[in-house]
Image (cartoon, rainbow, N blue to C red; front, top):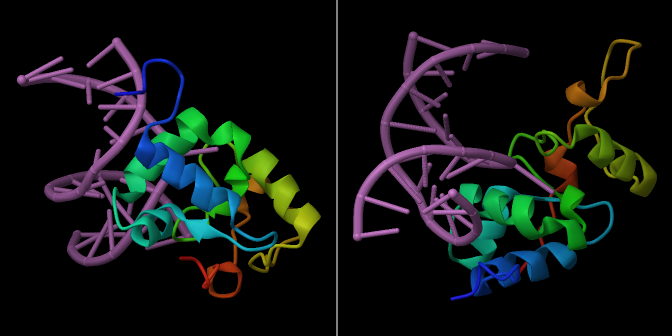
Amino acid sequence: MRGRDGLPTSFAEDVLDLSSRIPQGRVLSYGDVAAVLGSGGARAVGTVMARFGSDVPWWRVVRSDGHLPAGHEREALARHLAEGTPLVRRRGPTIVARDRRIDMSRARWTDAG
DNA sequence: GGATTGACCGGAA
DNA sequence: GTTCCGGCCAATC
């Protein structure tokens, strides 16, 4: 099958298609994406995003606890601040990207699928 | 065909 | 709050 020629597999295409339909200011967790598609798993979705995610709004796919994608916290935070995604309130004065999380109870996209 | 990797998840300590 | 661990599954070697 595909995969060696730089083209996404059919599972990867499904992940990318769903990711591209997440509304601005909303998010899905990696596990949510797999659940909506009805195939694969959270880790497999992460694998696809790492390999093919550059063309879609990848920052709208986050961890189930609201943490931003590992290794991409800075870029993701900038995007979310720009589009008004609900974030958890921080108490201290210092704002570090690593400590920022999505408020999943408010930001999760519930109309998916 | 098998082994390893990883932008994960949920529970346990 | 944290770290650790087993399970998970597509992509990659």
